[in-house]
Image (tube, rainbow, N blue to C red):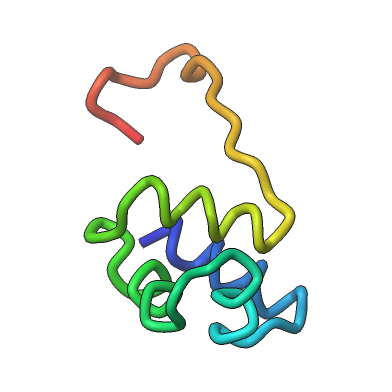
Amino acid sequence: MQLAMVLNGFRKKRKLTQKQAAEKVGLLPKSISAMENHPEKSSLESLFKLLSALGLELVIKPKRTGQSDGEW
């Protein structure tokens, strides 16, 4: 749910409705809603499209020392 809150927050910060964000990258507004409410059911493709609409990028980096393998 952290991802959902971050996506929603950035969309609102950019003053975009779900419809406007969706139109920028060829998604349906219901896809944006689904990512903001149930991100676990969304595809990676949709996630990357929304990130693009919001001017965001996904960064992957090693975990901090001390985190277990199963911990996010």
